Amino acid sequence: MNLEDFRGALEEFNFWWIALSIGLSILSHLLRAWRWGLLLKSSGHPSTLLNNYFAVMIGYLANSVFPRLGEITRCGVINRTDSVPVPKALGTVVTERVIDLCILLLLSGVTFLLQFNLLESYFEDAMSNLNTKLTSNWWQLLMLFIIGISSLYILFKSNLGKRFVFIKKVRAFLKDLWIGMLSLKNVKNQFGFWASTLSIWALYFLMLYVITFGSPVTQNLGILAGFSILVLGSFGMATPIPNGIGVFHTLVAGVLVLYGIDYEQGIIFATIMHTSQFITVLVVGSISLVLVNVKNKKKA
Image (cartoon, rainbow, N blue to C red):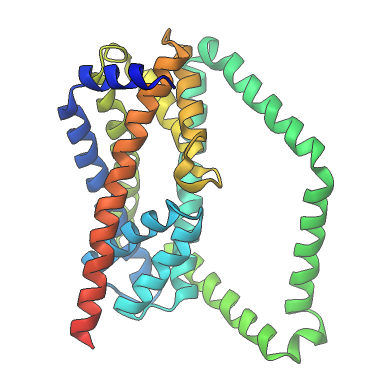
């Protein structure tokens, strides 16, 4: 990326739209914390909204350094603040991730069908690349499958699993994890859970879409383009790379090309979009980390 072009794009950008996007993202995180509280309560371990929010933001902060560490970190924080067992908390997080993945796949299908002629070649190339990677690494996938099946057999079926304390602890951990994963069926406020889930994704869409109005390059993009950015950006953030850096930019810039925007301009726009959210996580996550530690010291 040409730094002079990036500086020029920043000078032309209307930062009020970035501020609105940040506000929407903070609201989405708050709603996610509230939804998580419903799952924790249904698993038998109620917690406060504020502590849930701190845990969520600290989790995002951890993901900025090590991918997928945030889920474990989030559960560790809520264990410190509200004494929620880590395995059960982790089970509720897994449930969240499965639900969000289903919604993302549904959005992907709807977005693809509504813009079939435009997105067909893009998705064909993406699937072709994925198929090539899976085919070339088939033996690694097979080994992982064999190791997984063997581990489950040792844990739950063989006599060997009954003799060692470590294996007993793993069994107990998996049992609590399963209880956490089943927490959804025990949620009393089902309407609130599903309404908040849909609202979270609506806010995700809005926080990525409103920022397009800030640049003269992207201000005329339509709602369908916004959905494309949401879908590809979400897949980019889901990759096992800290905060999706690089992959997010490539996927968003690539899809913007289909709407007539130069790839280099798309990279610049994706960088501004990603950086605004990244800074938000760093600031709010760091504040949350400090406040959690202060609260725990006072409690002690």
